[in-house]
Length: 556
Image (cartoon, rainbow, N blue to C red; front, side, top):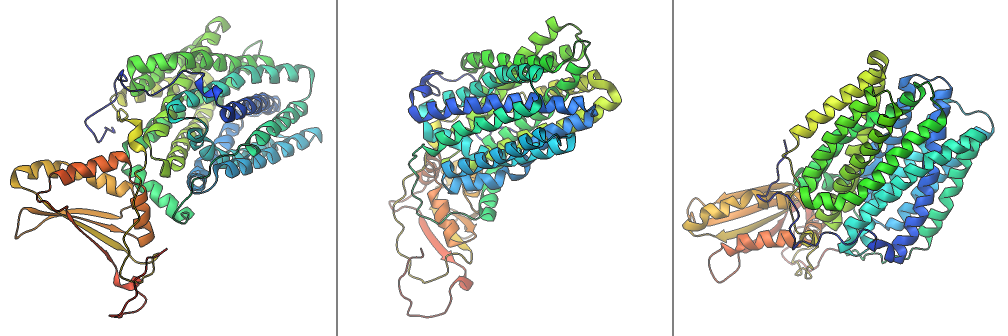
C-alpha cells in the first residue's frame, strides 16, 4: 500500500489554500472557450459513433469477447504509446502535436465511414477502424492534458479540468441519444459521417490557437532519454505512483460497465439501439450533476477520500445494474455511476496537473492515462470472458466485489497535500565556465557536496536523507549516496552520479521551489560561514585528448 513520502497527507483542503476558482471561470478565457466548444461537438460525434459501432457489433450477433474487444481496441494504443507521445508533449509544441493527432483520428473516421457506405463494414474491420482512431487519440491526449495549464491561469486549472470532464459527459449524455435517434431512421454510415465532420471545428480551433512556445535552452530529449527520465521521476514521485495505482484499479473494475452495457441492453425484452443510447446518456447525465458536487465534496472529504468513496458507491451501483430487473432502478443507478466516474477521474487528473512540475507533466499525465486505459483494456477483456462462463450478471457482480475490496485496501493511500505553487521551476543562473573541453553527451558526471554538521544536528540531517535521495533521483540522477568521513565524523558527503553533462544541466533546470526548500533545509544544518563545498567531475573517457594546456570552453 503506497503512503506519502512526507508526513502531511491530504484531508479536507485548508481554507487558506486557493486550489480552485469558480467552475465556469475558465470559460471567460477566449482560447479555452473556443477549444472547449469545438471539443464539445467533437465529443458529440464520437459518442454518437460509439452507439452506432456497438450496435453494428451486436447486430452481427458477435459474442461477448468481440463486443469487449471494441473497448480493448480503443484503449490499447493509449496504453502502448502514451509515454512516448508524452515525451513529445514535454519537448515540442503541444499545439502541433494535437493537430497531428486530430488529423490521424479524422483519417480513421473517414476510413470507417467509407467502409460503411460501401457496405463492407464487419466487426473485424470496425475494430480495426477503432484502433486507427485510437492511435490518433494516443498522440493527442498527453499534449491535450498538459496544455490545460497553458490555456488558463494556474488558479483555474482544477476548474478547467472539471469543465473538460463536464464537456465529455455532456457529450456522453446527448451524443448516444443523437446516435440512437439517427440509427432509428438512418443507416450507421450516416452516423459515422457526422462524427467525421465533427473533427473540422476542433482542428480549426487548434490551428488558430497562438500559444507562447516556451524557449528551451537545452536540446530536446530523445524518446529513450525522455522515457527513462519519466520512469525515474515516477519511481520517486508519490503523486504519480499513487495516481497510476489507483486509476488502474478504478479503470480495471469500472470497465465492466462500458464493456458489458451493450449486452445488458440487448438482453432486455425491450432492448434496442435507442435503449443502449439512453443508458449511456444516463451515465453522462449523472456525470454532469456529479461534476457540480465535486468541489464541495473535495472540500469535505479531501481528494483521496473522495476517490475511495466514489469507488465504494460505484460498487453498490454495479450490484443494482447486475440484478435489478426494472429500468426504474437501473437508470438512476447508471446516473450515480456516472457521477462516481467523473469524481474519481477529475481528482486523478487534477492532482497530477497541480502537483507535478512542468518539465515532466506531459509524461506524468501519459503514465496516469496509460494506467487507467490499461485497467480498462485488461478489465474489459476479463469481464467479457467471465460473461461467457458466469453470465453478464455474474461478471458484473465479480467486478463489484473487486471494486469494493480495492477501495477499502487503498483507502489510507493518500495524495500528498502540497502547495501547488511549490512545483514551479526555480529560475537558474547561468552556469560558471568549465575549464575542460569534453563531450557533453558522453561519460558520467559525479557531483559531491560536502557538509559540516555538528553532532547534535546529525540526526536531523540523516532524517532529510531519504527526501534528498528521492529529489535527486526523480530529477535525473542515476546513483545517489550519503557518506560520513571516517576521520572527521562531522563531515558528510552527498554524492550522486549523472549519466552525462547534458543530463546534469537538465537536472539543474528541473529544480522546483519545493526542491529548493528541501535543499535549503539541509544546508541550514551546515556549519561555518562558507557554503557547503561542491565538486563536479566528468569521467576521463569523455575528454577527447589529454593535455595540460586545455582551452576554456562551456559545452553547448
